[in-house]
Picture 1 (cartoon, rainbow, N blue to C red):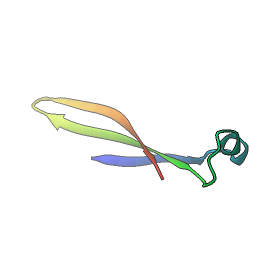
Picture 2 (cartoon, rainbow, N blue to C red):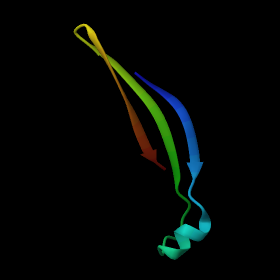
Picture 3 (tube, rainbow, N blue to C red):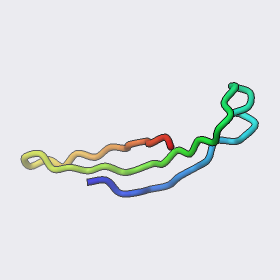
Picture 4 (cartoon, rainbow, N blue to C red):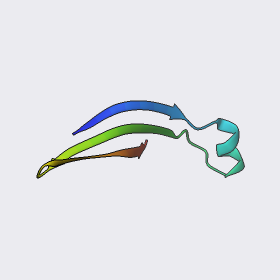
Length: 48
């Protein structure tokens, strides 16, 4: 299962310096899953 945690846009100035002409948003998710007895947790970053 994953739960939305936060999102952020990359600053336009940083993108222009890198030659990127379109906006980038990063979305952060907390992931969790149960395997056997132990629950495992992690993060997932999605670029949109």
